[in-house]
Image 1 (cartoon, rainbow, N blue to C red):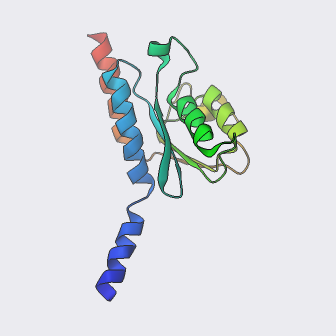
Image 2 (tube, rainbow, N blue to C red):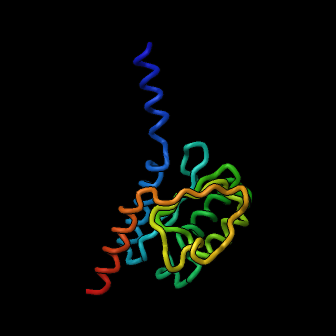
Length: 157
């Protein structure tokens, strides 16, 4: 019986911030492959991915088509409402001011980001999130940062 309980404890722990950030990194890789700035996002509720997105600003010729915005819209459609209470956003790059504003209005419960955006991130810009939103930064930051560096290095060639 002990082994069975240990197995279930292990299975419960598989769905953590690192697991879901890897899913967001998969979305960022899709953006990379399409020539978009490689930012990916997933929104999760009860350990289930309900929405995903990646940057589409070039394809849609739309400066608002950030990964977070795509994921917010998809999650709201999935849930049938505009509020994302109980949801967690996993995004490979710290949200910008625009995305942070949308996340504020969505009342999302938690934001987990990978790499810090030292120039345009919401923290640098002083943008406020909803007071009940928890923020965790730096999850798989090196992987997210390396993907961005690889993208911009390929663009300079």
